[in-house]
View 1 (cartoon, rainbow, N blue to C red):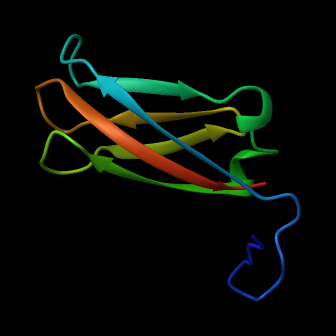
View 2: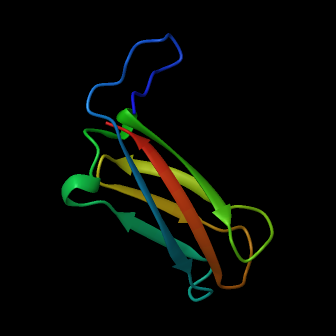
Amino acid sequence: MPVYDDTGTEVTTPHFVTGRVVLPDNPLPPTATVTLSGSAAFTSAASYVCTVQNLTGGIPPQLTINSGTSFTLVSGGSITITVGYICIGN
């Protein structure tokens, strides 16, 4: 399936990554770093975007893309939550 950027240019070697992660309530704030390895890794922090959903219910966590191989999720709450994510890029 081809993937295009907002200018209509085809993205080379695109792929999706999806998963779930638990953000534990200890220590506060609930935080988790997701590591992407092997074929899941992207070429750089600028080469992909992600969307996240709080599967426990409530506001989704803040997403920070650190590099092509990791991103961090931080919840504004004080309870353990499960987060689903999907990322796309190259």
